[in-house]
Length: 60
Image (cartoon, helix red, strand yellow):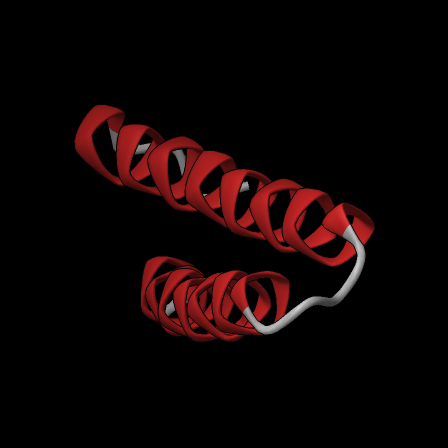
């Protein structure tokens, strides 16, 4: 279940990153793009961590 939630987090992070890139292209600050990248990468890290836990059989 945790991996599924993390997968949705990656999807949401990707949407935020795409939105941040579009805003940057239309003249917004580069801070938005950096924040979007940080959110996406942290969600991706959580997904990888959860998948590794599932593969090793740890439940806690």
